[in-house]
Length: 542
Image (cartoon, rainbow, N blue to C red; front, side, top):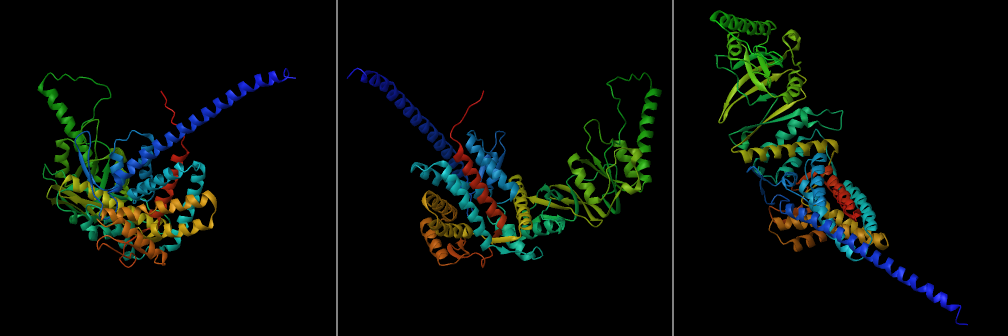
């Protein structure tokens, strides 16, 4: 009876051994996947913590030193992360996240990274409790969709003709910058600049039509908008040329006013004085002929493009132009030509044979102005309609000047965001707290793991008010608790007033920001976190 059982016992042993091996391998794989996820979360959180102290009006500035010894002082999240030397691939994703927010909205580059850091923190806690990454990812997407709906509900419609409302939004954006004390000047300047170049029929504004020109010297308060052009190059007046021209007819030249060179490298041997005189005479006649052809068109101002092959103009050419009372501005960069032609409504002239009076631009006045650090040339009174504008950006030193330029760019982006999505919401962490409160209620209607993950998403958004309070030197626990109570009572616009250190109605305090900035930050942060959650292995390549 025992004989038939022997083969069964013999077969059962290898099966048990194989099952044990498979179970061991699976356990090892899970451990490796968890380690990769935890490593990714730690790396991304390290980036978020690095910029967290820069959030809000009371945020601290960062001093960045490059390898060449250049120093940048800023609290703009995108600038800080762009200058960082990051090696970890997931940390690089956070840098790209900030860059995406900068392109989409232009503001909220620090907020988006801080929100992503808060969401990753709660992801780590959910993973430790054994919840599958895919379940967390799906629940986060659901919570994000609901959050953007809530923000839209509490938003305030804005009319683009209401200049005061636009200025309030722009002032909020500038309040956290180094140049915040000049927000009274920069905010209206940004609003007016975008209003000039905006097309009412389109839902977007091309900021390439606004040219920011930096000039060292003076103070931030000397920054101004010019309806026309500003050049940091001074007028060439070495031979007594004019520095002020009224009723200007402007030619944008892309050819050289200097003797031509041969295509191949060669040597000309001059053996006597007669030959030398002949060469000089020919050169003189050639340049004189060019200058006469230019003067014949009625042109009295020349914008000469910089040349890399040979001198754009010789001293002889400058002399002839000054005799003909033609103002010369040389070394115009190639990438500025398109903007100049759009402003002056003229055509760039590539050869002397293409010179025509109809190709010239017109302006009421071209004048050279003295500044504390050299001279600038302003072209004003350009022909209508002019859909471009120039901003002359000033600063007492290089660091302030660069930060002023970045702040103006952010302010312009805020006005553009309002143009794209014409709604604004209160600032001071009011929308994040309202979303958090409503998501908590929404989570109660859901069941199972989904409800748990949505609640965790809601709690993660409280990192914004907690960080704002912490950076302002307030007690984050007390402030967040009081905010939670206020929003539970229905005070949708209650936020942190960091200047007074209390909680107040942000709409009444005129602390407003574009809806696009907040919704874009939330959507991009959620998308980035979901992507990080889906990674379970890092594959190195040669």
